Length: 184
Image (spheres, rainbow, N blue to C red):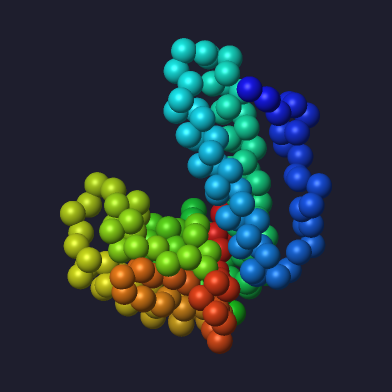
């Protein structure tokens, strides 16, 4: 099996442009690293009896996750809206809005998948894994989040599309143009 050189870890790919300001292209970089992360996680699950190989795979996975986080942060800069996960505040063009823990986790799930419809079942299981919330309650939280996004002046909104789920989209943009990303 071919292995990456350790020198590749920690360095961006040659094609990456840190000055990129097109939200669609930024989403592509996020998606690329998310897929790579899935591949490395799958490989890691398949290696049980080789601690050296597991350590190598963990290093590669950490690098991939670091690159995905970089592009999410860049997306937040371009979008003009950020979410501070420490203070649970959404910062938009009109100011700051405080989020509840559940609103933050819901937003985090949508933010981590820019331009993608996230099914309600997946939102419920990933945003609140220990909860017994139902889809009707999810709709209530979506409504609250929509109001807070408007209050903060977020240049995006949440669309609902059955049976596909929910997605963040920019105002006046197509569903593949997300206007919000996690900043921290």
